[in-house]
Length: 302
Image 1 (cartoon, rainbow, N blue to C red):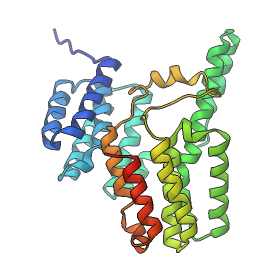
Image 2 (image 1 turned 120 degrees about the horizontal axis):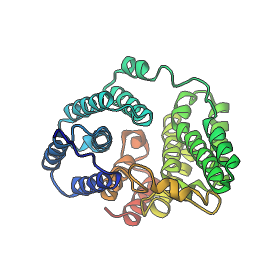
Image 3 (image 1 turned 45 degrees about the vertical axis):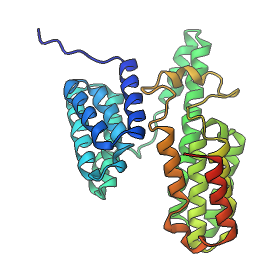
């Protein structure tokens, strides 16, 4: 009596993947209605509410009623917060609610949710690795350190677009940031390991260069962006490599596994849209820009 079924991680992954594919093939409202039905059915499952909120954060822009979609996702997350005593789920809910607040131009709410984020890190991973080492589990100890290194490197490169925007008027720091991030990308083979983070960096440099009127820098990084989209991004999946050789098991154990949060066709469309934004209007009629757009269109068909 009173039993409420909890979905397994595999069940949630399967539903997420199915909805992701459907969003690329069917009218948004039709798919969203089915998402809402499943949310009602499993409204007692905090992890399912979390993943469906992530789903909607990655697809709300397809709707004519984006604001209401985000409001609903925020309500799901708040209900999930009340249901769960899992620290990791609560941390993700905090992040997602702050993301929704910023999309809705409500920075005060985001600040209230994130006020403790900038505290010094405790180094839990090193302690965890040491505990495994003392238990003579060398493999798991090395995996913990590899995961920590991987996440920290991705975090540094992933934060660079925001920092480039903040320092765009300080050219020495702006240029030094580009050089240092390029060094990390090369050193850790990030174009293979995590191409999406590299593409966001390349695109951000191109945007900032365009606003500075630096066409040479803009084209250099738009070319890197187009090359990465064509040659590095697909097939879409989180990846390990020969250096982070113990990473794969951790990646596969993530809530969504190695799958990406949106269907490839939606991602390709957003890439095509990104090169046609007003940032580059000044250069829209130039031959070099036309050729870049043609190469992107031919190399990455939707």
